[in-house]
Length: 403
Picture (cartoon, rainbow, N blue to C red):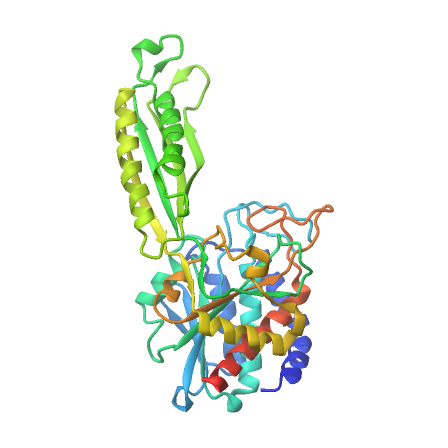
């Protein structure tokens, strides 16, 4: 596949890709409830000549090329948005209250549709097959395992996998590709929910009540000792309480208090996570009891750390250098070789087949400041959509040639 042809054809697709992306951006959908986005993807793929198939609760797959000619590579784009109210100053703002594409998944969907168009145009040149995956529910870490359990790695079985994620917060010009090296590129993540039950009463008579807020506050502080005093300083393990709720008014001691948060580690075997979970259970229950409360913690929505195959990563770096030259950058030069603190549910796939991930810089100023993902004011530069489409298509085609 000629790189210049791919770049030129991708540039011609740019107006269509931007239109698709902005349409998806105006109508964000979260979790598995992505029926409109899924229908759009199915429609566009069908118009290109594919026979797309639904997979799992809300996923879509399509095949370019012929699995009988060689190996198969999987390309993934996620489709879901975030439960945010958009504050970005754009003329295609979200029209759905409380939902926003604040992580760039609308960009990913448009880019993979562009790649699908390019691959279909060069289908007879492919030395194998490209499996296109449009995935829901990445933000809640449920979409990837759902599609895996529904046969994602079957008929045909992919021999390698690749994903691209746009990034808005890095001080690097838009349109550059950061390619992860081998090893762990992002942390695992697990959600937790702590419930503290006391006895409510009037604020003037605290001695007649059992205050769950006091107990919950001490639990929150005590949990910090796990990281500072119980984990190996050379390991990585952190938990963050991001939501704390108790009471409805100032003069009433409530019956209960609740906390929600996340645990993140870079341990592929999750032993660090198991230690944190064990100690959290002990601390929550015992500190709660010390303040006369019943307290417990539950864990849910686990996502493992992302594992990058070193051989595939090196090949991807070579292919991208062929395609975009100096705009292909080794991620370790930016990250210092450290795993990113964010998590990605494509990690489930990375623990089963060789996987590589890339970041495409797409920061765009809003009120003179470039906001990062998951901020209600974030803006993504969608003039680089064609670059993402070309990267998906070219890397897949070149990998099939080399393998």
